[in-house]
Image (tube, rainbow, N blue to C red; front, side, top):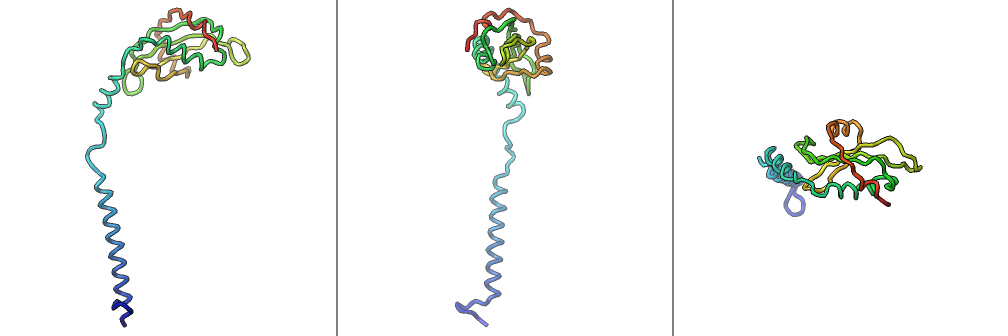
Length: 157
């Protein structure tokens, strides 16, 4: 028995299945078209990009002072300030300039605690990260030659 329009129910179901199959095929082809052999930069390209950012930080002391002014609870009257010259060392997938800084600062209650050491890493000549995790800093700053850093004692809020 034919329904209105000259189609029976079986033909309509077949047409719907055909449409669903074509939509699924189109989706598979669209996703498959996104795949390619180019998955991004090669390890050598990534390494070259990393190494290109190793620019000696000419203003490393100024960058450290600016950072420590906001990092320390009380940046005034910091004692025992010392800083090492930036040296290239292994950090992440390559090398970075690292400067170590030593200081005694007051805590939130105004009391001096133990001497702290931190390591500052530089990217493109600018302070990128300050590391204060004892285990990491101990490894990074084990051979640091600290020179006096009197500018640290002159910090204000």
